[in-house]
Image (cartoon, rainbow, N blue to C red; front, side):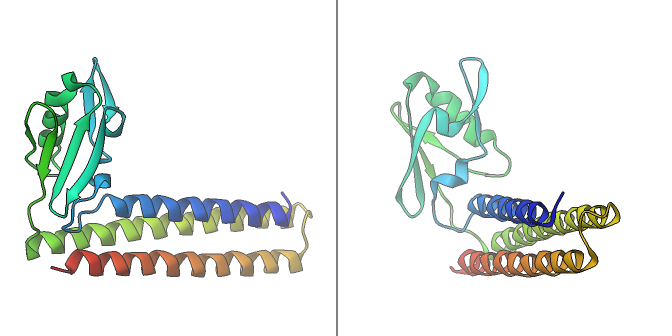
Length: 187
C-alpha cells in the first residue's frame, strides 16, 4: 500500500464515521417532533419485520406531534403496536382508522439530562472509532515502511496528515455534539 492509498482510505473511513455519528444524532429526542425519531422502529408487515419508513409516510405537522400515514391501511395496527412496544421511544400512539398520531410529551429536566448522557456515549463511541481508524492506518504505514515501499520521510508525512485529519474529525464531532446538547437542553 502506498502513501496516497493510506491517506485516501483514512479520509474515506473518517468521513464514514462522522456520517454515522450524524445519523445517530438524528435519533436523539430534542423535545420537538421529527420524523427521524422513528427511524429505528421495525414494523411487522406481511409476516416480516421492515423499517417503518417502508410502510408509512411520517410527518411532523406540529412541534409536539408526529403523524404516520400507512401506505396500506391494513398495517395501521401493526405500526401503532411497533411504536408503543419500542422501549427506547416510550411513546403512546393513537390511531383513528386512517392514520396514527403520536403526541410527543415535553421532556423533563431529568429526561433531558439522560439524553445528554446518551449523546456523550455516542460521542465517545465515534471518537473510539476514529482512533481505531488512525491506529489501523498507522499500522499500514509502518508495514509499508518495513517492506521498503515508503521511506522514513513518507512515513512521517503520513503520520502528520493522519493526525491532522483526526484533529479535524474530533473537532467536528465535538462541535456537532455541543450544538445538539444545546438543542436538547433548550426548554
